Image 1: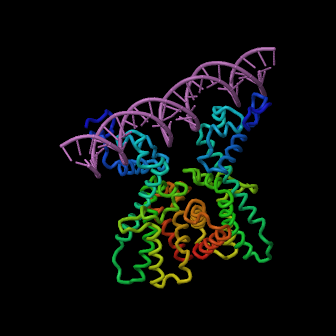
Image 2 (image 1 turned 120 degrees about the vertical axis):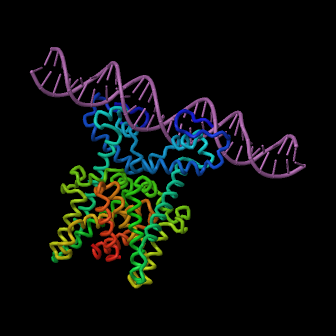
Image 3 (image 1 turned 120 degrees about the horizontal axis):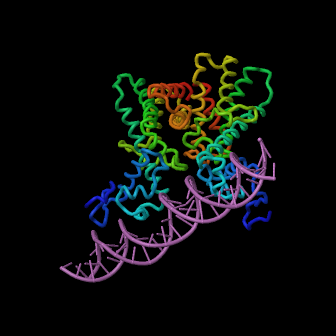
Length: 214
Length: 214
DNA sequence: CCGCCCTTGTGTACGATGTCCACATTCGGG
DNA sequence: CCCGAATGTGGACATCGTACACAAGGGCGG
């Protein structure tokens, strides 16, 4: 029950009870403020008040833990998108609504990248984990992954007549490419350090380009 | 003079002569077949036939070495773009030429990403190094960086009347976003494993989108 | 209610890595 | 020719991921 001098919350029960989630939670915090390379096995387990090897009962290796964290971060991307859509002012015009819904997907993506660069990098910068962007573990509160949210928004554009049906196939990759590319430029690239307002404007320009060019 | 049993080329002179470049060269090879995380200080120096600490006479730390490698990789991107432009069939029509020149920039980018994923990731995946994409250390044979090649191609589009002048400012970031985004999807993302022909087609679609939407 | 066993956490240990320090060697300019 | 600056060496250390053997304890059959 007593703390060990440093900040680790010592537990009195031998079993932890919910170590797996505690590890993911601790790793998420580490990743939030340092990106994927900051999620260090020993630091994570220390935070959970447990010896390093305990992690191996729940994850095959550090990569497996990182993967779980990546999925959790992706789920936060989805939630940010959903929040952006939910904050949209109600419109009677279904065409304008479909367009706004689509733009909100991109805007949410940019917003998350700027507000949580560490988590964003953890979600996507990890080689090979982007391939799981459609796994349900990456879903938000609506149960949809960022990729699925994008797909639905594109379907909405088609229904509203804003996107020709023959352009629909593969459109998610065009949109995703442009949005993800800018996000990376904003975080690690030459656009890093842009003021939030400038970044927002840049994001809108990219979305404009997508709408015109898709 | 004699080899030490493993493959390291032992030298007989105490001084190496050109260690700095030898280290970069060795690191480039490591990066080529394993990405940035494969450029391990001890492996690099071993390859150069030198003790690990020798690297510190030429680079402040591993990050500095990695940065130099990143710049060298970026220069290779520039060379691939230049090669793509040089391979263009000659055209009398200057408008078509400007357009082809622009598209070659993107095509070269995609080609490099697919042919040398390790180097590509080293050039851009390293947090913070993308910000130096305009440094001369990243230039190709023509002395131009990938970023500058893109800018010139866009200027060519304006001159040819293919791009309105008021759309020119900031256009490099729109184009770069889309191209870089797809490259990442192709290498690490859900589009990885696409056949070269499919990847090429996807790349052309992205460039189509840029031309329409820029 | 009891004893067994499978799950979960602990302790110790090892090899690899980045980096620091003191020392050895060599080259170039006075 | 000789001395100091530049360059490479050797040894050491903290930290990291991970393997192996062991301890604790909760749940299940009897």
